[in-house]
Length: 206
Image (tube, rainbow, N blue to C red; front, side, top):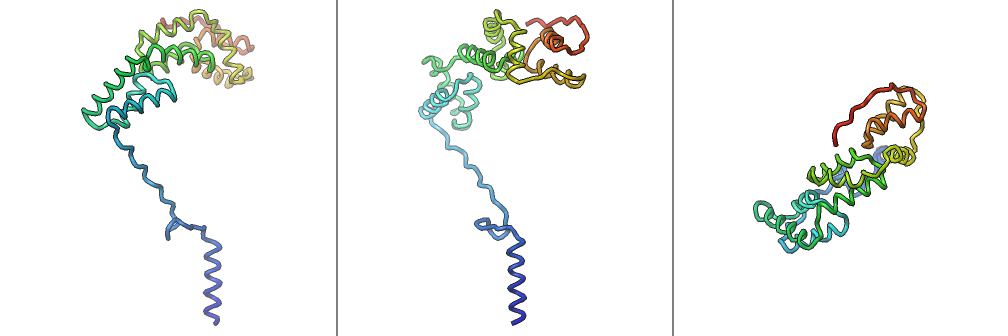
């Protein structure tokens, strides 16, 4: 009887101290299910998939090509199907790097308040050709007062005037990362009353 009572107390102690592992097997380890790869699509299904993808979000040719590669057949047949789909979408007017670059630039400028250089970097990452990128950016930023854009960025990010050199350096990095020219960054900092060196900055040609 004593042995039974001792065993009952031991079991209660184990149940209390060990985590509950219902449905996880005897080891208490959670097993992650392996994600099954999507089945490959034939050319017609791949076209339908591409149209739905573009309907959900505008894409550059490079971004769409990469997305289609995840669902196309492996090897040369899949590559041929991808190029055929892209050509068809261009002919239908559903896919255009020119339109994508213009809309992407407008969104980054109006919504994010990014300067030209930040948007230029992002367009490059999207696979937009440099000549198209430069033309699009020139059209979009030719009449933009960058200091006004910088103030809008500051307001959007709720940046506060720096109180010391460390905060000034941090603010400078954020403004430069936003794609603003160095001259504009100095102007913003001086407008805040930050103590920065008066330097002549030669901007790189756009």
